[in-house]
Image 1 (spheres, rainbow, N blue to C red):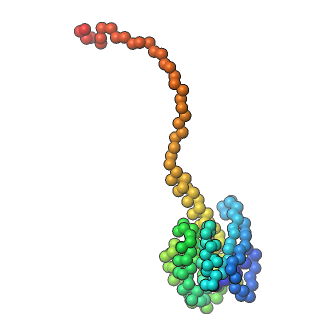
Image 2 (image 1 turned 90 degrees about the vertical axis):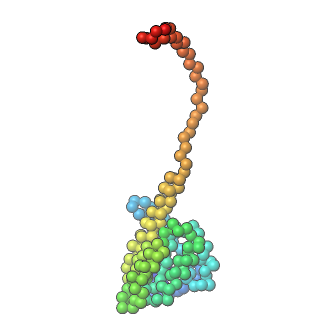
Length: 196
């Protein structure tokens, strides 16, 4: 579907037309600036084959974002999106940023997955959505920018909710007793105007 090609294009601005299947897991690191904030991205490229599913499931833990990729020219890969999304949901919190990516979008005449179908599926799973092409460098940077911004937004939202959920407290300090001497008050004759 082109996960490795997307990663290579984003981190190294390179593309290789040679298909080499990812075995197990690979990753790359890229530092970006989002709204003046430097963010170090550690992007994991997991194998898509079923035989690696037990290995890749451990990499969901601790993730701040999940990118689910299908090939817009191969409807079979699109049919696997629900399975991958359901699997991700077993391992991560629903507040983790997600994006559905239709890759290999460089040849519209070869496209077999309608954009509207992918948009509906993305909405069903509360995912962002974009179509890309690692080959022509279409929307690759935008896709990584979208998922990074969403991950940051959700992380800040969670931090604010956690802060707001903290019980308010007032710190009391012991006060030393103060002895107050007052003059005795005395009323003689009652209130004015009374007949005492």
